[in-house]
Image (tube, rainbow, N blue to C red):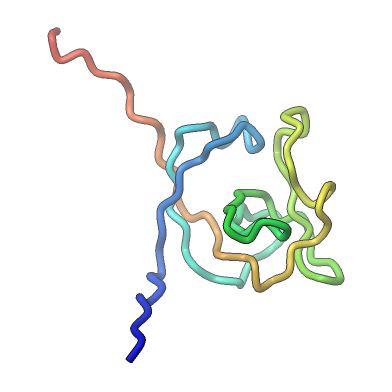
Length: 111
């Protein structure tokens, strides 16, 4: 008998790059609801079409033939998005971002 862990409805991911600044910064944590029901303008978590083991956080710009056109908010960050790899098939959309929590502030316990 082969057992696989069920996919939880929520997952937590950490922002690693600058592509979604100023709204999301490296080190921010996101709570993502697993769903493929997204609308243009929402921030989504998806698998990179050429590297399915890599998760990316992008803005769903529009639905196009072949899936969703995903874009970075920070165009100057030389980010990898649909302008480089084309539309992302709907099957690679993991969910939409529901909540961001800020980076914890350093605390000096000696004070």
